[in-house]
Image (tube, rainbow, N blue to C red; front, side, top):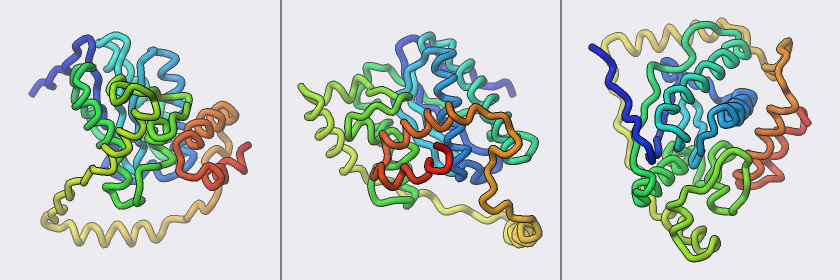
Length: 255
């Protein structure tokens, strides 16, 4: 069957989701997340799109973006997924597909403020919904820029947020209350197919035989622009994390 055509219309925002191949948790390493933020910075410079929402989870990523031209969306995602897959495979010493199938995209009019706020809240609530933490602050989402009015160097406020009040302080209070009222829907339980338990046991045995790399850096023997990567990631994390003093510890060995 032919692929369904993307809805590329001017004046629309796009909620894009990409997932690691086989739903593997390939984005848990700090170096991978830092590299992703750097790639986003390079991609923005190349295509000039607006990034309103971002959340990097352990095996998938949420973006809320607005391309400068509607036909730029496939180019943006192609370049970003190609660049990060190439880098991650080299860093993790692996080959093959890094991202799972096509990116998922839903679009809506930029002026649909209710939809925009609901989408932003859904993106920012992902770590909370996954029981990774109790609140909304998260090192690798941009909720902090909306709650504390910080500049993370990558994202900006959606017009829907700026329409919540007559001042930025009122916008913050309104969005904070809006997020606190959010109740994530429970995710459906995974169904086991025939042989899945047997295969899971075999995978555990196979993993046990692998040598653990320990704390060895993923950057070893790779000529990566480390200073730029760390600078971009550090600005983003410190602008969005709950406690900058604690979050800064992940950069002490690199800066």
